[in-house]
Image (cartoon, rainbow, N blue to C red):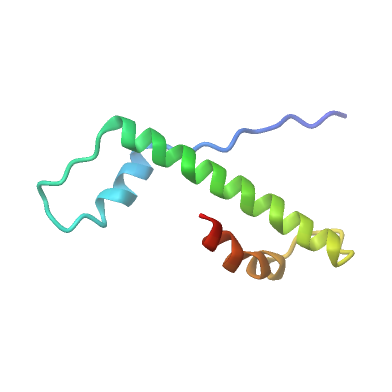
Length: 81
């Protein structure tokens, strides 16, 4: 059976609330384009984290990806982004 790919997507409202929560001034506004761009950046970050975690697990001859694999790739991932 072929598996269907489920695209990673973030709701605009969720991204907007996450970003707005860190604004220091109440007057700061977030444009729709900025929200879309940030959603795409989050999508790339999550996909890259999953891929690197998978590679780490494979390098350790594991059949499953565990949180430890993610923890090992996280420092370099954050430096890359």
